[in-house]
Length: 453
Image (tube, one colour):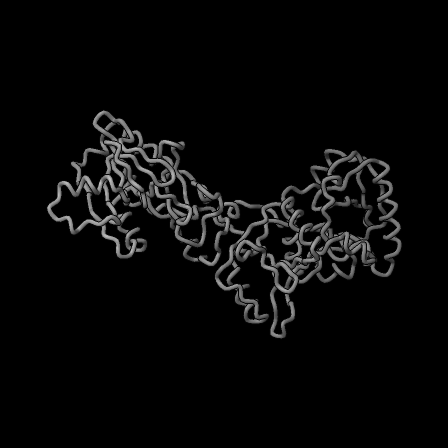
């Protein structure tokens, strides 16, 4: 996961919070007819001519919105002159940038830019508004489009001021394609993380920079396990409630507790007793490959699956029996671990559909490494997603449960961090299989198989 704490972007403004005027590109037959009356050269005008206007936002009394903007593309100027807005921004610099790439081909533009006397930003109301805009821009603005609410990433985006007669005043980021003609463009959203990781299209930087979790994967990686099958069980909520739990008695006299996703399994007395009987029955069948817990990480599994993962000085402690005991606040404080167990993870979509490769959905635990994985998948397996993809974040275990259930229902499998070798063999990766499906197929022969849930 991302470890950086600094901001992931800065607004590259077109000037220092320019407030006093708007620069507008638009089309108006009324305004065109008005101009024609005062012009001796009518040949320079056509019905398709565009107007480049500089409009003051405040008058001498501080009154705002001399000209009235309406979503999505309407402007009413003094004298009830109506303009179809094509682009609105805070400065001539911003308009020049827009025209460099978006100027309608073959269309003449009539410039009606004013020059002002420099006082338009000094009216009292303009000064107050400038102070508010500056404060908003210095805040930790979230990296979500103010319109579609999807993440801002991997492409050019605008910093906008929403200012019209139909909506509340606000500042925010927006994708270029989501920006409406009447949205007042203040500048661009830029940042080194966008330049260095441009392949993370639509990636949710803001969430990922603060996310915590992946406890299972971190445990596996710490134990040197980079290729494993993990059993997923979505029946987690009932296991977090109840007055009784399952204690595991270890050979050295210590004890621990049966957990699910880092939480001590709880339930009513009758249910826990039935689980204890089942656990003890399975435990007694594991005489040749005993079940136990590691002394440092409290990882559990059969001896054969844990012995070569022990750290220096760490011991394998065989479990001798299970028993039903009351759940207490002390057990909660010592053995319950907060945070998400599987997530966050990401996957890819192509044209709004989840990318499925040979019946598998590839998920990643480290999105910053996406380009390396894309190269590996293409080189070793011939999987080429091209550039038309988006990176989608599964933010918490509740979302992951729904994702897994939907995939399982249509017989699609999940593999996390798949990395392929020279012979198209999977050399690294975590397969996540449905526990219920394994039960149905009669494969539940052991108490656990590695750190399974």
